[in-house]
Length: 342
Image (tube, rainbow, N blue to C red; front, top):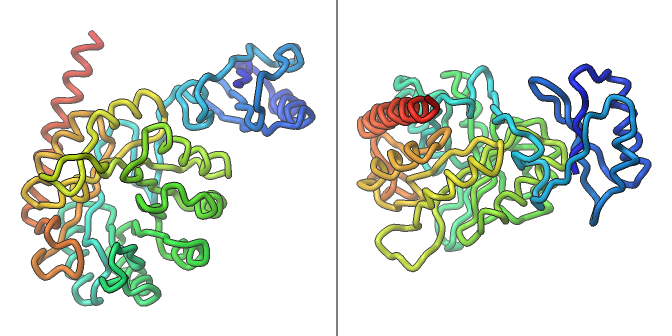
């Protein structure tokens, strides 16, 4: 349920509505907008007596929300959310880029990659200090040493760090270095981890699980928002299908669908979807055409020597070309939308 306040509603009136909602045994979530504040009600398993809230001073109307995900839905927050990280925005209309290797490698190699990424004007560096791997014998990441290297990279080049948090125990350590906490596909429904990350101040990049429906993905995001963290970025990274031509199948339709259903920004990961570097560029273009707010791309100065996921990693020259192509598609997308609006 959503309680929409009048444009001129006072802070005291909004506080009174929140107190009334708590008095009913539910949880209020004030959501300030450009024109007015709305208060989302969660915790109710059925209808709330509307008259109790509708009669309070400053209330314009009380609206039922049909979606099970309340806080991430456009029904409760019509305006698109923009997540700001150190002066850089994800969402809001401008295409953003996140690039870097699959895993943190040696300090010298990471400095070389970071220098190349920064030279291309990419503000976000992605690299895993902790790596979830299917095989217990595969490289698992440098862990604490990897975090130290990422911190050194950030200090030297001013890049914003995006790295994965694997467990509740490592949240504080990762959050002390990362500008954006990544929840990987395998942990999308690790609800204990979601609840703990929700209490962090860091923005969160939430990857879609390999077999997750769009609703399950959005419900995972709901855990983060209901726990207090509204700086959430969704990431479509491909799902498992019967196709064996690529590592996963990039669900381009999900990007368009989620943009319609939710106010949260959506980025695409064509690298994990493709599994093959020659497919990264066309999948990136498709994601931008579908309305993605950004791209997260695995890149390295020498992909064939990458410590993990080298087959889907592109070199820095290729990354420059992908960025240029994506920018061109972004301009076409903006022009098409402007033409449709007319």
